[in-house]
Structures are given as structure tokens and as C-alpha cells.
View 1 (cartoon, rainbow, N blue to C red):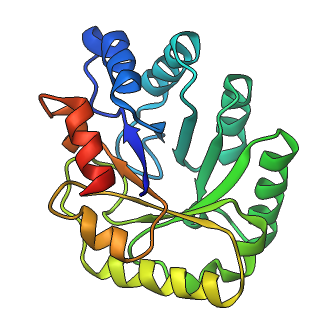
View 2: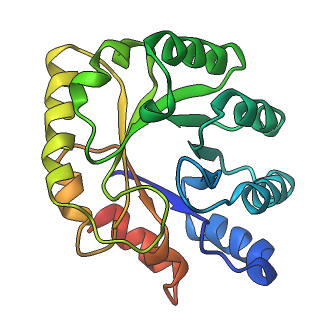
Length: 220
């Protein structure tokens, strides 16, 4: 069984509090917070996502899975530290060099948060292998970051399998999360690749029954 991290990117503002409550009752394992700055990706969700994350911390004990698609990573991390997220993910591509990557990983750990790195579909795994022993998780983007509702890119599944094999061969306990185009049609494909957590947004938020959708994604 895998865990489900529900992306709240497409949640309507007037329905937000009820939706968050309903997702908790439905059995989501995490709330996935997609923070975009309008620079690293086109969309800017900073204000809305902070409002949503703050609301969740007041009404739910379900952990926050925070995904930064931003250029100024540390500034954004500092804003979220008071919300005590379980996981903070930043993009390898947003970092200037390896020293910055290591500094950010250590900074996240120092604040008792689990560090994770995300890579875009076109980024090679070789780029991040040196960091894997330091990481709680790798988030493999299975679509280009920045928009919800995209179709999963099949080539990213091979990358996920390659990562799983590498982790097993090197006795590393780093988790694998995938994000993008995850639904009932694609979930088995990524499960077979060896993932631990699947991010699903539109598939759950647009479903008539959150609980049934999450159950099917976990167990189908």
C-alpha cells in the first residue's frame, strides 16, 4: 500500500475549509501544498497556499507535504517553518550549485523537518545521487511543474524505476514520491515503479466521493 498526498492547488476558496475537513475524514495521508512564485514556474500561488496551509494547521492534524517551486527557496522555507510541515521539498533546478543544495538540506533538518528534493522530467537522476543519503525523500515530477490536470509523462516512470533500483542497491531508505497526472488509470504504473507516496490533485478534488477515490488509489 502507498500513501496519498492530496494536492489542494485546485480547491475553491469558498469551499476550502470544508474540503480540508472532508479530505481528512476521507483518509488522505498528507495535504500537498504547491507553492509557486511566478518565476520558477508561471503561476504564483504563494498567498493562497499560505492561507490554505495556515487554515489546515488550525483544523487538522494531517501532516503538510510542502513543495516549493520557487527561486528563493530559503525565504520561502522561513515562512513555513512556524507551520511545522512534515516534509519540505525544493527543486534541484532552482539551486545555483551543490553547496546550496547541501546547505538547504541541513537547514531543513535543523528545523526538525524532513528534507526532500524534486526533479523535473528532463533532469537526470545522476544530478542528485550524491545527495540521496542526506534526504528523506525524492519527488519525481511526472509532469512539467506549474499546472494541475496534466497527463503523466510515461518516460518519468522509467526514471522512477531506476531510482528505486539504485536506492535498493545502495541500502538507502529514501522515500520516492511522484507528482503529476496520477489517477486511477496511471496509479498502478507508478506503484509498480516502487513509489511510496503519490500526489493526486484533480483526481481527488474533482471526485464525487473523496474517500472512495483515495481508497481506490491506495489499494487498486
